[in-house]
Image: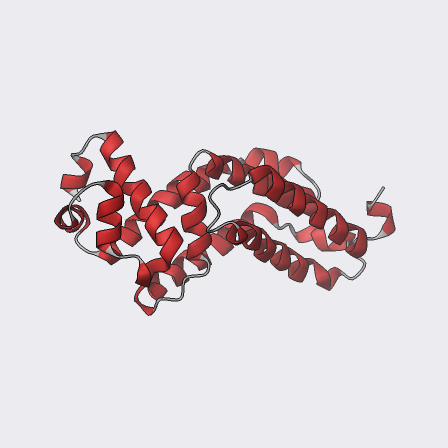
Length: 205
């Protein structure tokens, strides 16, 4: 990838955004190297020169997105939130803020969670496990279950909220414009409903 990194930053971003856009819109199998080249205004041969293969390009994009998303989480702020639902909401807002400044990442990452191509199964299994462990360590706390009417509901509710958060993003996968405010408002309302239904009365005051 030395030839790619030798390009100007502007040209690199153009190619990255073109690839994110194509993979995000069509998925791994249906997105062709030619589609990416046309969108980036470069030759198909250049894509192979820069990345070697379609899978290597996809791998690079996954790493690129993680480098942008992961640092967006402020552990100090999350640690200061003593409520599970508040931490999930705050962490979601942190992620959304990062993706808001990188709109092509939003579409791409939404497609990643739905991707079923056997060619990238190994990459995505590793990514999803790493992301899951990261989120568990970042948000879930041992004493969170104490606030639930049924303590055993804590982990399933947490898992459900994570799936719902990805679902809200996936809904806008093919949208021309991603409405961050609408997504977060809907998610916040859902969190409030779940909290009111699952928490003990004394923790709703």
